[in-house]
Image (cartoon, rainbow, N blue to C red; front, side, top):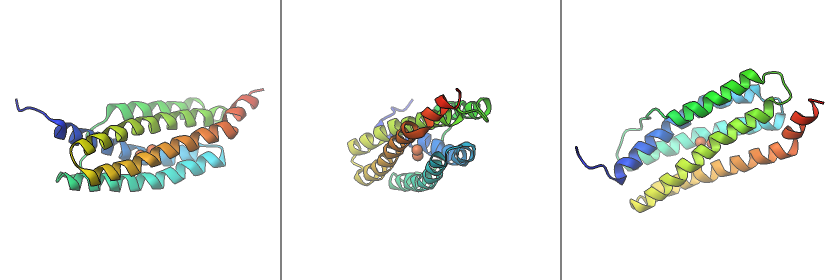
Length: 166
Ligand SMILES: [Fe+2]
Ligand SMILES: [Fe+2]
C-alpha cells in the first residue's frame, strides 16, 4: 500500500467540502421557503448566492492542484442536513420553527468553518498560497454568516419562539 501524505488528505478533504457545499446549495432554498422571519429568509437567500461563489472557488482550488472537481460523499453534512429537515417537519407552523432553522443553519456553518480552517492551514503547509487565499475568502464568508445568524437569533427569533408560545 502506498503511503498517504498531506497531499492526499488535502485532496480528500477538498472533495468532502465540495460535496457538502453542493448539498447545502440545494438545501438553502428549502430553508428560505420555510423561514417565517423576513430577515432569516433574506439571510438564507443571500447565503445561497454566496454558496454558488464558494463552489466556484473550490473548483479553482481543484484546478490549482491539477485534479478534477469531484465530490466525495460527506456523511457529516448528510447528518446535519437531515436534522434540519427533521426540524422543518416537526416544527412546521409553530412559533419555534425559525429558532430551529437558525440552529440547524449554524450547525452547517460551524461544520464549514472547521473544514475551511483546516484546508487553509494545510494549503499553507503545502505551499499552495493561492489556494489558501481562496479558502480563506470562503472561511471569512462562513464566519460572517454565522455571526449574522447569531444577530438574527438575538434580535427577534428566539424571543418570538418564546413569546408566541404564551
Ligand atoms: Fe459554504
Ligand atoms: Fe455556509
